[in-house]
Length: 198
Image 1: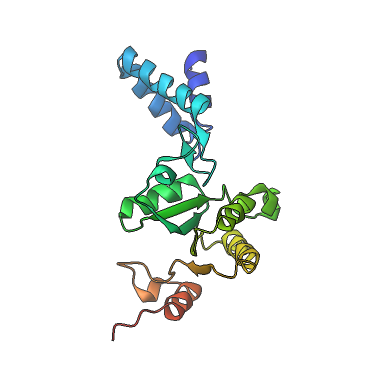
Image 2: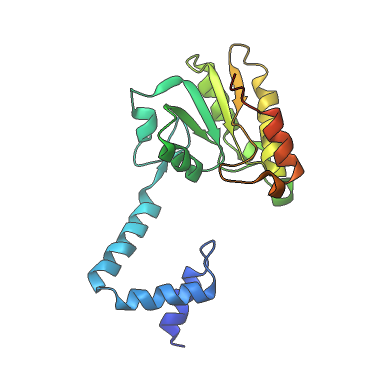
Protein backbone atom coordinates (compact mmCIF):
# COMPACT_ATOMS: atom_id res chain seq x y z
CA UNK A 1 0.00 0.00 0.00
CA UNK A 2 1.21 3.51 -0.78
CA UNK A 3 2.65 5.38 2.21
CA UNK A 4 0.34 8.34 1.46
CA UNK A 5 -2.69 6.05 1.36
CA UNK A 6 -1.55 4.27 4.52
CA UNK A 7 -1.26 7.63 6.31
CA UNK A 8 -4.78 8.69 5.29
CA UNK A 9 -6.25 5.32 6.30
CA UNK A 10 -4.43 5.53 9.62
CA UNK A 11 -5.81 9.00 10.34
CA UNK A 12 -9.38 8.21 9.25
CA UNK A 13 -9.46 5.02 11.33
CA UNK A 14 -8.84 7.11 14.46
CA UNK A 15 -12.43 8.33 14.18
CA UNK A 16 -15.00 6.47 16.31
CA UNK A 17 -16.87 3.79 14.38
CA UNK A 18 -14.41 3.86 11.48
CA UNK A 19 -12.38 0.69 11.09
CA UNK A 20 -9.48 0.26 8.69
CA UNK A 21 -11.68 -1.18 5.92
CA UNK A 22 -14.12 1.73 6.08
CA UNK A 23 -11.20 4.16 6.26
CA UNK A 24 -9.73 2.58 3.12
CA UNK A 25 -13.08 2.92 1.29
CA UNK A 26 -13.31 6.58 2.31
CA UNK A 27 -9.74 7.27 1.19
CA UNK A 28 -10.35 5.63 -2.20
CA UNK A 29 -13.58 7.63 -2.54
CA UNK A 30 -11.66 10.85 -1.88
CA UNK A 31 -9.34 9.98 -4.76
CA UNK A 32 -12.37 9.96 -7.07
CA UNK A 33 -13.58 13.35 -5.80
CA UNK A 34 -12.65 16.62 -7.45
CA UNK A 35 -9.54 18.15 -5.87
CA UNK A 36 -11.53 21.31 -5.04
CA UNK A 37 -14.15 19.24 -3.16
CA UNK A 38 -11.47 17.50 -1.08
CA UNK A 39 -9.84 20.85 -0.42
CA UNK A 40 -13.19 22.31 0.71
CA UNK A 41 -13.73 19.32 2.99
CA UNK A 42 -10.32 19.55 4.65
CA UNK A 43 -10.63 23.34 4.97
CA UNK A 44 -14.03 22.98 6.66
CA UNK A 45 -12.64 20.38 9.10
CA UNK A 46 -9.61 22.55 9.85
CA UNK A 47 -11.74 25.68 10.39
CA UNK A 48 -14.17 23.75 12.58
CA UNK A 49 -11.44 22.36 14.81
CA UNK A 50 -9.56 25.64 15.12
CA UNK A 51 -12.47 28.06 15.48
CA UNK A 52 -15.26 26.19 17.30
CA UNK A 53 -16.04 27.40 20.80
CA UNK A 54 -18.25 26.26 23.64
CA UNK A 55 -21.22 28.40 24.65
CA UNK A 56 -20.42 30.18 27.92
CA UNK A 57 -23.94 29.52 29.20
CA UNK A 58 -24.82 25.96 28.14
CA UNK A 59 -21.55 24.37 26.93
CA UNK A 60 -23.04 23.63 23.49
CA UNK A 61 -20.87 24.13 20.39
CA UNK A 62 -20.89 27.68 19.11
CA UNK A 63 -19.24 30.08 16.70
CA UNK A 64 -19.38 32.89 19.28
CA UNK A 65 -19.82 33.58 23.02
CA UNK A 66 -23.41 32.23 23.05
CA UNK A 67 -24.80 29.42 20.91
CA UNK A 68 -27.80 30.10 18.62
CA UNK A 69 -30.18 28.39 21.07
CA UNK A 70 -29.11 30.52 24.05
CA UNK A 71 -29.24 33.63 21.83
CA UNK A 72 -32.79 32.89 20.67
CA UNK A 73 -35.16 35.19 22.59
CA UNK A 74 -38.09 32.96 21.60
CA UNK A 75 -36.88 30.00 23.68
CA UNK A 76 -38.50 29.19 27.04
CA UNK A 77 -35.82 30.28 29.52
CA UNK A 78 -37.61 28.70 32.50
CA UNK A 79 -36.79 25.14 31.38
CA UNK A 80 -33.37 23.60 30.81
CA UNK A 81 -32.75 20.11 29.44
CA UNK A 82 -29.52 18.53 30.72
CA UNK A 83 -27.82 16.18 28.23
CA UNK A 84 -24.51 14.32 28.04
CA UNK A 85 -23.15 15.46 24.67
CA UNK A 86 -23.74 17.96 21.87
CA UNK A 87 -25.21 15.20 19.68
CA UNK A 88 -28.04 14.80 22.21
CA UNK A 89 -29.02 18.45 21.66
CA UNK A 90 -29.28 17.79 17.92
CA UNK A 91 -31.39 14.67 18.48
CA UNK A 92 -33.86 16.52 20.70
CA UNK A 93 -33.95 19.56 18.40
CA UNK A 94 -34.77 17.28 15.45
CA UNK A 95 -38.06 16.35 17.17
CA UNK A 96 -39.18 20.02 17.05
CA UNK A 97 -41.07 19.38 20.31
CA UNK A 98 -38.83 21.07 22.88
CA UNK A 99 -38.59 24.87 23.07
CA UNK A 100 -36.50 25.39 26.21
CA UNK A 101 -32.76 25.75 26.76
CA UNK A 102 -30.09 23.07 27.12
CA UNK A 103 -27.12 22.28 29.29
CA UNK A 104 -24.39 20.00 27.89
CA UNK A 105 -22.47 18.15 30.61
CA UNK A 106 -19.67 16.97 28.34
CA UNK A 107 -19.95 13.33 29.44
CA UNK A 108 -21.03 11.25 32.41
CA UNK A 109 -19.43 10.30 35.71
CA UNK A 110 -17.26 7.25 35.05
CA UNK A 111 -14.69 6.31 37.71
CA UNK A 112 -13.37 3.52 35.44
CA UNK A 113 -12.37 6.17 32.87
CA UNK A 114 -11.23 8.64 35.51
CA UNK A 115 -14.15 11.03 34.95
CA UNK A 116 -15.50 12.57 38.13
CA UNK A 117 -18.16 15.22 38.80
CA UNK A 118 -15.56 18.01 38.61
CA UNK A 119 -14.76 16.99 35.01
CA UNK A 120 -18.33 17.78 33.93
CA UNK A 121 -20.07 21.14 33.62
CA UNK A 122 -22.31 20.60 36.67
CA UNK A 123 -21.14 23.75 38.48
CA UNK A 124 -21.99 25.82 35.38
CA UNK A 125 -25.53 24.37 35.52
CA UNK A 126 -25.86 25.44 39.15
CA UNK A 127 -24.56 28.93 38.30
CA UNK A 128 -27.22 29.24 35.58
CA UNK A 129 -29.94 28.11 38.01
CA UNK A 130 -28.73 30.66 40.58
CA UNK A 131 -29.59 33.47 38.12
CA UNK A 132 -33.25 32.74 38.95
CA UNK A 133 -34.85 32.23 35.51
CA UNK A 134 -34.84 28.42 35.50
CA UNK A 135 -37.89 26.76 37.08
CA UNK A 136 -37.50 23.19 35.76
CA UNK A 137 -34.53 20.96 34.99
CA UNK A 138 -35.18 18.00 32.69
CA UNK A 139 -32.53 15.28 33.00
CA UNK A 140 -32.14 13.60 29.60
CA UNK A 141 -29.18 11.38 30.41
CA UNK A 142 -28.57 7.84 29.09
CA UNK A 143 -29.70 4.75 30.96
CA UNK A 144 -26.23 3.29 31.39
CA UNK A 145 -24.83 2.71 34.88
CA UNK A 146 -22.70 5.83 34.41
CA UNK A 147 -25.72 7.80 33.21
CA UNK A 148 -27.80 6.72 36.19
CA UNK A 149 -24.93 7.63 38.54
CA UNK A 150 -24.64 11.06 36.93
CA UNK A 151 -28.38 11.63 37.13
CA UNK A 152 -28.40 10.63 40.82
CA UNK A 153 -25.48 12.97 41.57
CA UNK A 154 -27.10 15.93 39.78
CA UNK A 155 -30.43 15.28 41.50
CA UNK A 156 -28.69 15.40 44.88
CA UNK A 157 -26.91 18.65 43.96
CA UNK A 158 -30.22 20.18 42.84
CA UNK A 159 -31.86 19.49 46.21
CA UNK A 160 -30.47 22.85 47.36
CA UNK A 161 -32.46 24.62 44.61
CA UNK A 162 -35.81 24.68 46.40
CA UNK A 163 -37.87 26.47 43.72
CA UNK A 164 -36.70 24.29 40.83
CA UNK A 165 -38.60 21.19 39.67
CA UNK A 166 -36.48 18.26 38.51
CA UNK A 167 -37.84 15.77 36.00
CA UNK A 168 -36.42 12.97 33.85
CA UNK A 169 -37.37 11.93 30.37
CA UNK A 170 -39.70 8.94 30.23
CA UNK A 171 -38.04 5.57 29.83
CA UNK A 172 -39.53 2.31 28.76
CA UNK A 173 -40.80 0.50 25.71
CA UNK A 174 -39.85 2.26 22.49
CA UNK A 175 -42.32 2.97 19.70
CA UNK A 176 -42.59 -0.16 17.55
CA UNK A 177 -40.95 -2.42 20.16
CA UNK A 178 -42.57 -5.58 21.43
CA UNK A 179 -42.75 -6.25 25.16
CA UNK A 180 -41.58 -9.85 24.90
CA UNK A 181 -38.18 -8.68 23.56
CA UNK A 182 -37.63 -5.94 26.17
CA UNK A 183 -35.44 -6.57 29.21
CA UNK A 184 -36.85 -6.50 32.75
CA UNK A 185 -35.43 -3.08 33.64
CA UNK A 186 -36.95 -1.48 30.53
CA UNK A 187 -40.35 -3.02 31.32
CA UNK A 188 -40.09 -1.86 34.94
CA UNK A 189 -39.34 1.71 33.80
CA UNK A 190 -42.24 1.57 31.34
CA UNK A 191 -44.70 0.50 34.02
CA UNK A 192 -43.37 2.99 36.56
CA UNK A 193 -43.51 5.87 34.03
CA UNK A 194 -46.88 4.89 32.57
CA UNK A 195 -49.20 7.54 31.12
CA UNK A 196 -52.87 7.65 32.05
CA UNK A 197 -55.22 7.81 29.05
CA UNK A 198 -58.42 8.16 31.06
